[in-house]
Length: 394
Ligand code: MTE
Image (tube, rainbow, N blue to C red; front, side, top):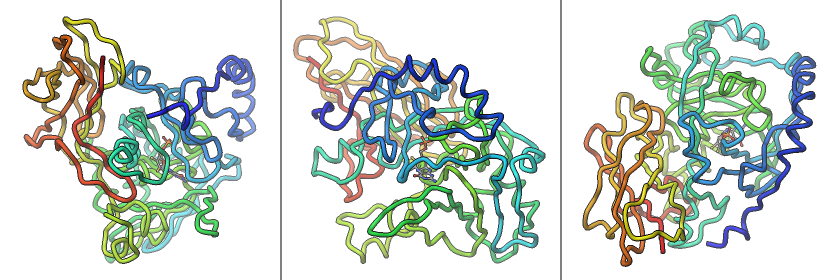
């Protein structure tokens, strides 16, 4: 793939550093964070700037288990809104006993929890779908994924405070952005089943109303001042710039739940109407070093990458295997990071290559014994690509 045609590497790091050192502090005092300060584009391959869609290079991605904000992918459907934190309010309405309207200070008075969770875009690896047959949309490589420490109130605590009515089954989220699609402008929305929202256990977080990412206030591109984080689910359910929660007896009618994030073969209206929304990410893995096209000397080579568990409570990565001979033999990788149900698993393997080695392949197996599929069925929207990851080498 010609990456240069779809991405640009823009070096604004120095400028951003100079500005941000003095300016960020001031902006938080005034409660506002202009979007221009949000993305460190020197660390990201930018697919589009308005809206901002960008991902890190693969070697950069796996240098840390907790991804620095500067290396964290950004996926936005509309432009990043500028939000005044002082006048910001979150409303909770629908099938609740007491509708709420809360400021950030009031949210801060709920018990605060820290959750480390991986966020992945449903379109991660879409460019591999497109190699089979072109798919519209951002041509994500394998970098639309990141692992961060989020902090904020639990959605379950907020729902308990509002008092959920018995008929409730789903929780809707709405952001403050304006997305243009099909001649209409509307806010991005998501929804999750009530059971997921209430799933809190110390070991297994349900969903968090996050105000910080890696111990700093959210940046504008990542949802300042408030976003959902729904561990184990596709990133689209982790609504940024969150301003409204609606408790309902059905999934949200928002375009991004009702029409967009669905697995469909051709994308006909009938297929879309017949398919349910996607919630969980499937088991996945990718090789991050060496990168595609690397020249390898015959001998031992270190291979590194990530694996993603399937978002099922209690299920983590058991094994990652790498092959240098088209899948005839496999070397078990060392799991080099923490193992956790809603976090990615970093790994590394030493593998022998020779002059006949054409590619490296990785596959993951989860703690239930389920293996990542060798191939996946093409789908019209290019979601959930999780076939064995192949990296051509020389
Ligand atoms: N929330 C709003 N309001 N608008 C959006 O466009 N994009 C979603 C989700 N939340 C989106 C949103 C998608 S598709 C993903 S993958 C994640 O945000 C990406 O989060 P990030 O940009 O912080 O990495």
